[in-house]
Structures are given as C-alpha cells and as structure tokens.
Image (cartoon, rainbow, N blue to C red; front, side, top):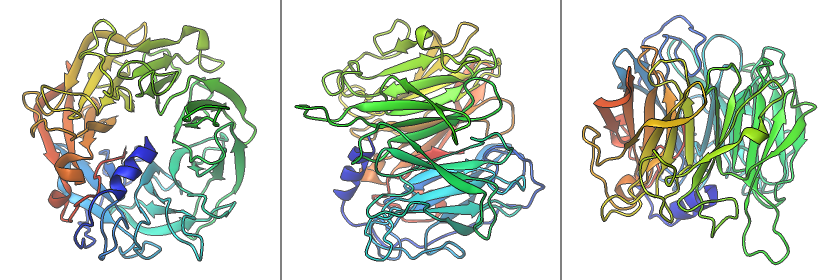
Length: 478
C-alpha cells in the first residue's frame, strides 16, 4: 500500500510554494493523556502531508497537528511543521517526504505527548535515501523544537523511519520507539529520551520480511495484559520461486521485544490493537485490502481478521474474519474496494467495548469509483458484532463534501476522544480529494455510536498552507 501511495504521489505535478505556519495553543498543565501535545486534557490529532511542497522543494513534506477542545478539533489552534520550521533539524529538499510517517507518545516522560516524524527519503551525504526520524517535543504551548533520532545501523538506501510505533516494549515504564526501514529488521530505540538526543540504548529484531522491501506498518499494544507492549510488524514476504508478486507477511513480537517471542500471523497490510470484548486483553485486528487474485490471503474487496487476545497472546484458534459479504456488514464485496486498508479501535458509544473503524477507500458509490467509505463495527461481550453496523461516506447525510471519483475517503482512520466526553470520535481522511490535496473529517461519538451531527471537515488551506498534491491525511496519529 505504501508503494502504491508513493508511486501515485510522484506522478502528481509540482505544487506551489508553501510557507511554514504555527499557531500556538493556550498553555495548560500536563495531563499525561495519550496524544495530548499541549497538556490541556484534550486529545490532539497529527496528520501527514508528506508530499507537500516546502520552500519550492517538491515533496519536501510537512506534518500538521490540530488541537482538541470541548467542541472537537479546533483548526484555529494548530501547528504546521516542516524542515523549515524553527527548531526542526534539517533543510527542506526535494522528495525528503518529511511527515510521511508519524507516531505519538511521551518520549521524555514529562506528561506532554511528543510527535515522532519520519522522513524516509531524507538524503544524508551521498546516501540519497538514508531516511531520518525527528522527535518534536510537546509542551504547555504545544509542539516545538525537534531532536534527531540517531540511526543505530546506518546503511545505504535504508529508508530509516519508513514506519514508526511507540510503546513500552521492555516494561521499564519508559516509552520506546520502534523504527522500520528497508529489509527484514526493525530497530527498537529504548527510552527514556532527552531533548539533547540521549536514550537508554537500542536493539534489533529480525523478521522474515523481504530483504529488499520496507516494513509496511508497525503497531504497538498489549495483547496478553502483562503491562508491556507487544509489536505487530507487517511488510512483504520474500519472493517465491516463480511468483509474479510479493504478498503480505505479518509477525507479532511478544514483550519484551529486546528478547522477543515471535508468532506468525495471517498476512495483512494494516493492523490495530484494542479490547473489543472488554476482557482486559488487547485483540489484534488485521486488514488485508487486496483481492484474492492479488494476494492469496485476500478476499473479494478485502477483509478484516480479528485475533482475540489472551493471557498467552493472540488466540489463533479463535480467529474470525469479516468482509462486505458478511451478513450485517454494510456494502457489497467488490473488486478493488480495499476494505480493511485502515483500522482503528476505540469506544464510540462509551459502553466499555472497543468498536472498530474500517477504511474502504476504493469503495464505489453510484458511478463514483474509488470515492471511499468508512464502516464502523461495534464491540460486544462476544467480540466484534455486525449488529448496528454503520457506514459513512461523503454521500452520507450530514457528512461534508461530495462523493467523487478517486477521493479515497477512508484513506486512514482514528478513533479517539477529542472533546473529552468519554466517547471516541472518528477522524478520517481522503488523501486524494481535489487531485491529491487531501481533506480530513471529524465525526463525533455519541450514546448510539458515531453521528454525523456536527460533523466537520478541513483541508490544508484551512490550516494556512498550500497543500497541493500533499496527500494530506494519508496517515493520522494521536
């Protein structure tokens, strides 16, 4: 999926000059809340604009943060970052793709969430695609200042920072950083981090991914309730003899990942971890958006697979899959729907069970191919259920915008409580809206789940920068 996105991005025409902008939010005491960059007790949302033009440099890249409030996302309070921003290391260069990957966590333990930003195409010396990772620090005034994370294994063309995840992988109470690059290994940079760039050390975990492919995604979560985060690593399997293409491969590394126990999971391109049945264990949700004709682990239109958590990790014998052909799931299973290409778990109705948001950006609505949709499936005592399932698109009443061909609504999804009412809200994107500029939507959680009442949307221009061909919202973190 990443290869497809980058190929489409490079096919876009050069955008116009974009200047860095920062609007400082009001100060607040640190809340210690996940995704709260300014410590005011409201979750904030970070968004990629990794192919944005900066200082005339095509695809130099940006990242943007919109701060939460009692009324939801407040676009008047935002921070827009690039390598031309004060305090951010580096210089904008063509095709650096700063902001192409994001992760969130409190890396220095000060109670403010920090933002980790990847620039996987950053040039270092003569190494055109060395890659770079920057931590942008949270504070009472929001995000400011950046520190470079040293690549522990600098090699030529390794795309360091292609994928990112934050979690406490060794159980010492400090957030650690997992960094994916090209090849079959993932680096674990161990906290605590300091603004001067020090950290406790690093280690490397090996997978059976293809040595010439970048890791597709990294997902952190606690699947066995031991208080330590596990890591799901996804990417391409090695080419088989006579095969025409690579297929998805997925591995779970049970904590501590410094001496991990590896489990092979069904092949997938997206993952989320959350408690769907309120038993205290994190359930793994895997998405394979490819048709079975493209990937032997796929299904017509794509599928989602749930692996319930347990005291010993995922219960592989209790695996259950869902497609748009499953009874109760909105829509119809059709080729290229890309059902399952983005996933997020959160409790939208505050009933204590995690619900699942599923992006299906290739969905056709009417005559508009690839306009996209998001499906919400509810959690229950027996796990995921199709009872009360809902679907949302730009053709849904109350959702701003118009369903148009190739918008790819549902490019990424995040369920997180933005307005502090105890219910997860949906933030989703259509990265190809308006010829690749991209737009983002926010739908509120309610006692009946997600609602379109009060739904909002915004684009890069709302945040004060030119986002032409930026693929705004291609990835969402918070």
